[in-house]
Length: 638
Image 1 (cartoon, helix red, strand yellow):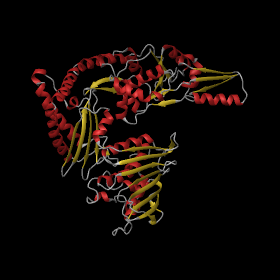
Image 2 (cartoon, one colour; image 1 turned 60 degrees about the vertical axis):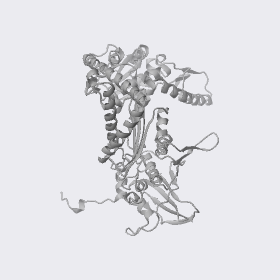
Image 3 (cartoon, one colour; image 1 turned 180 degrees about the horizontal axis):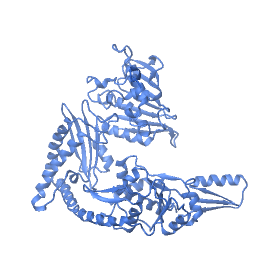
Image 4 (tube, one colour; image 1 turned 120 degrees about the vertical axis):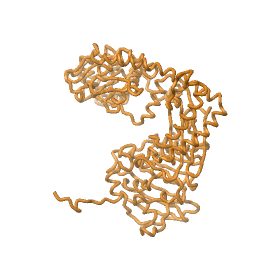
């Protein structure tokens, strides 16, 4: 086959964005869809950073189109001499066009390479750009990145400036076009804290409140990230706050140590959430480790206490928000979640090292309290050696299957599934009703141990937990000071948690999920964990029966039966799995054709960790607050 110039294809920027959207917005799922909004908002934020904008309005319309309006300077509409088109059209249609390359326009910017708004245009079925500038309202329309009209003057605006972008994501690109209010709300709230004095309005025209108004939120912060930290921690005491600026860097840090042992660090560069950290976080961690280590060995001399500490030890219980602003940030990938400018490490380290040293010298009592907690924690870690030895001894149990396990006859894990069933009674019914070729059943006695609250020694000595590990065929071992999981011999690739549809059943499911999340998370990440959904109601009439999974379904079935003038209708409310016979359990919950399974996934690891720790950990106060705030949403079976 000849390879000539005919085989070489050229695709311009807009075409390439549409051909490879994930290269520019991360993915074409929910993350990428919301990233479209962030890209446009980032342009408005850049105007705010430059001192020209203090209001941003974000509207979700009924058809899931989006409008973003700011009161910045407005995108220029005059002719670009080199390109022969207006500056507005250049910004909207050419990858790499924008004011972010000109340090006179934007000293710092959240956008990268100027691709943001042109990407949004390319991935929208239609987009309308309106510019309020020079006392006039300019408008230009686009479709899939291509102008479909000239710039028209459609009116006058007295004393009004700004840019208004309205767009509808292209259904040819995105899997599903439905915006999540909470996701947008959290990001806009975050931006308001990072840009104190900026008002951000979020309006959702898809929802109407009890007063007949659209759902609305206004975000505004006077104190910035210090207020952000209080929002996260729900406390305003013992906050360490640093704000410094030089020619190369503007830095703001708010942090506090709490009673937990979890480390939470939120980092931002020019308003961009760098969820994967980067060089600014490396500089922060170096400074904190260096400073606290110096003080630690002053109060707890190494020779006397024989304790070696690490940076991770020193950050236990730390919640910190670090926000920096720099010119020309360099990120990994277009989604910009990790900073890679090497020079930033030293700049951040120098500032933080100096100022937290000053803070701790002025607050010795507070410092001693932090160091005492670290000392006790490091001492406690010595017991982990015994736990390692225990786990290594217990791994011999993996060779033997639990007595309670009713295994399946197939050996291929891709075809096999196991039900982890609440109680021996329901377990017995499940064993009778299952398809023995590919379905295994392991009954669990009551509630398993809460692995978030208990020490490792106790966890891996627990009989039910040992049974689960053994039945699955996985291997737990210590390596590099942490617990790891080997799934090479995993016996089932569909692990189904089946419990009663009541409070106790939900609690048991949560306990099992906590075990998987903390010690066998890879099984969740690979999509092997499911939750069964047994019905709540059995409705009988003559020789027919119907199942309902909630009250709404039950009422719908009853209404239909009554409309057909059917009498002698009986309704049974299942209190638990034990009330179903083997046939009913099979046809509703175990038959792959009829059953409904909920796959367990992790959309945000950091949030998931916080939720498990809050709900299942030792700290009662945040759990109490969560319950008080959310109990009205619980469907409690009385």
